[in-house]
Image 1: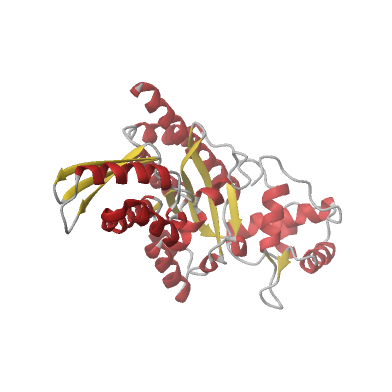
Image 2 (image 1 turned 180 degrees about the vertical axis):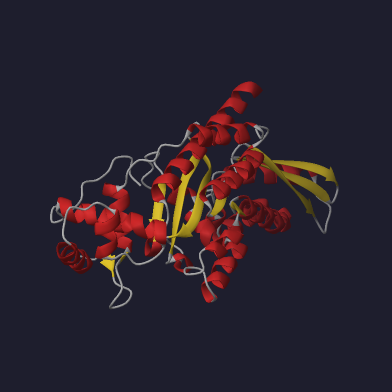
Length: 359
């Protein structure tokens, strides 16, 4: 969601905006189609039922409302929810009690990022009544910036790789004795040829070129390059954790039967959701605002009847994760946005405070 509200389309009159806003908020509260009689009785709209019905029919023809049954009231469409979030929603102010609960519980877990994220998603789930998630982004460009080789005996050596400031090691065993000059030659070759390349950029022609450069010791190239690619691939996988998955059962009209099974499979396998939390996707349109994907706006097909709300977490300028919730499109957007925004900022502050104390 953009930090500033965009203006509604010009063809939407103030009365239409008032009626659409009232229908969405009533549907969020009740979980049922909303009719003109309910609006005149409970939402203080200064129009006759006939006028409201006409406006509702026009809003439906414009794609902002849907009528599930001929005799029923209307429910918001995805386009209606999107307009509501972008232009009509009222800001939600967290109560002092809610703010203090967030601060108190976050302070209990200041030791490391994992502990902070676990606490944050428990809070997000319990305070919104939706399924909460914490994500560490899938890296889109993981490379080794420097290689070292340590020869441990005549047939073994340790490959040392510096990846994003983190040291990774891999033991390499050879079928024949490894000469000291061979390990030194290979180390130089790795830094010259593979430093700064992703696993996808380490191609077969490049490996063959390295084997030619190694000469008689070309047998070392294949196991070493394989170890490098496996280490890079394991390093860029991302991570997801959830809390409150059972809260899906609170919304049987959305997550009943096959839908529930599909969502549970999504949470278990995680790979599709991890694509949403790649570095590239999370940094798209990064303006520091809460991000909202409604229904078919979601990248994951299984979530075409759900809403994903999340906000990235940063350590300085570095993207380190995200906090969010998944729930039905009939969501209390105003409160959820405020909660996720506050939690994300709280986690970022704790991380930065921890960095300052460790300096």
